[in-house]
Length: 345
Image 1 (cartoon, rainbow, N blue to C red):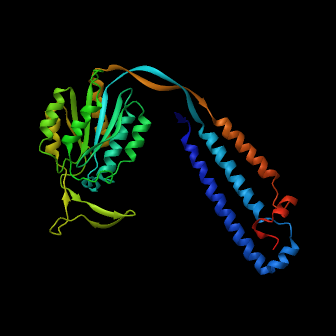
Image 2 (cartoon, one colour; image 1 turned 90 degrees about the vertical axis):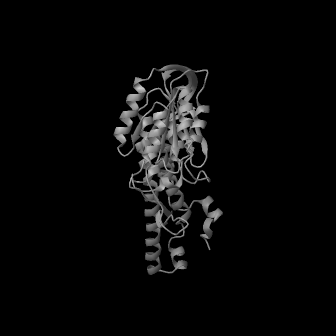
Image 3 (cartoon, rainbow, N blue to C red; image 1 turned 60 degrees about the horizontal axis):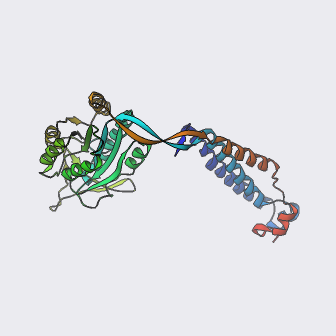
């Protein structure tokens, strides 16, 4: 397991493409200027010791030095010891709708991206609770089992898209059934299922399945993303809208937020429906609900004793800088023998 202390210094890596572009521009300018001055044969006689290979090598070494120094500033840390610790919290499973209707842009930037933002912000406000993630459309798919690793949860979340499940629809009932398998019966933790969806094209069994889940101790909260007025489903290629999804009659499909379905599911499972338009409101509502719940103690494996690794990158960075200082752009004897790039021809 690793940690990154100062991720902002990754921006320092932008120096590398800048150096490469400047080097290429300089080589083009030198080539054009030399071509005006004399032909290739005469230039080789006037400056026989100039080496293109060493110029390229100097740039490569300089880029490696910048990369190592930037990584040293980021200060990566490696966990050296895995410990079992006791924590108190609630088990929270997120079921995210990834059906095609979630591409509608009636809420910015679109319904699916808004759903990801909501889950990310909720996770950011958790303390010691465990989280799991389910993706569903026409079928439900386990994305991440119950874990205390919030970084992994957010990584899996960002990789979710509408192409990950081929079967379309909104099988909320299957998502609820799958969520039941996430919770450990031996650990009697408080159980929360948060469904983020537009509620459209749902199964009629959703409410009854939600009621059954509540009997097993699962409270279901639903978050609606989208607009009740609805919007078309864009068909894009490389980020450009080519058309909008049409029905069998050639009419543009308008997908609408179905709040009644989501309210019914939440009501059956002693939960609550929350409109997802305002992120801060959603996060605060979920935080209040979780804070009121009794926390159950459970064991979790966590890395401890993280050790700094910046010194390795700093050492390599200084090493590459020293090489760059002593690396001249003139040919050496060994380089003449190698005759790289056919420079003696």
